[in-house]
Length: 83
Picture (tube, rainbow, N blue to C red):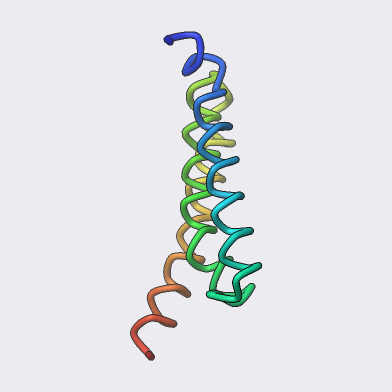
């Protein structure tokens, strides 16, 4: 089990599950593409940062992934608060 996390494959599995969920929501027309991007985007970038940390990537890649999640999160908040 520790090898699953050390290799980053645990995060890969979560990303695949998220992609399947996003595809289902898109196919059933429950969410628009923009809404999907804003809802799933921050989580995807946070997971990519976690994966980078798990595999021992340089701190810059981790910081970049985490920083990329923030603007999407703010846009999602604005979208939700506007109704």
